[in-house]
Image 1 (cartoon, helix red, strand yellow):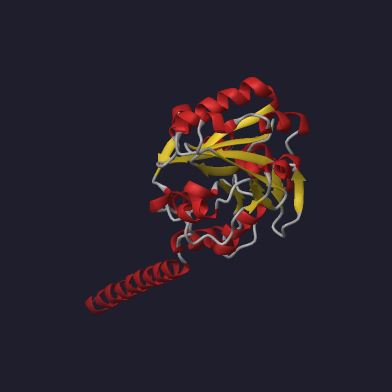
Image 2 (spheres, rainbow, N blue to C red):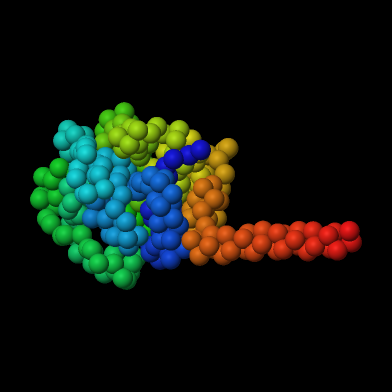
Length: 305
């Protein structure tokens, strides 16, 4: 029997509008009521992850920046890994605009989210109802930050693939972690950091192991988590790079169709309390009718004597 769920946010727990559906919200609360542990593992920073946690209406541990930083259910930092200055400087000195003039650089430093351009309209168009926007600073100030994650955003996936190859060449693949959370986001974070390793720390804190957990994801940053937990699932809307690597993993319904929540209900046999109550009433009625019928038969037999 599994005792925990670890899930990605965007493209997995959140729907196509980056919101928590009522069905998912109810599912998580039912899960916690049954004593099952629930963890969020996301590429977002703390404030971005907390925004989703608050929408769920629960207090749970958060794994952020692809496993670089983790927080307990009260928002206390458990651990944090920053990009090493030597390798970060090499990445930041690359002329990324030469690979595509529309490529954007942004990054997380602690709870701060920084950009070097005025991108309010860009992020508004991506999510009109967003409440948080990155802080614009100068390129010089940007280079001084201690980042847990930086990422390059672009509409042309091929341009980002070329940039990825350049970063690998300049920095060395063994010195940083590089992945695509989706086709338009190339993300750079500390080497040896991933969601699975962070989840292992939190699970061990709660007396559990990765094999006790079920996991869900849609991005390449979810690969380790999906393959190392006791049971892992990929979303129908997953990036092709993830699906190419997961040859033996079950693909479930998309985030737009509450795929994660539906599978959680199936695995843990969760039902709304009203449905459970109705089921109990029906079962009691059946028992009562059977007893009444038994009494009728008994009376008929007595009358025949």
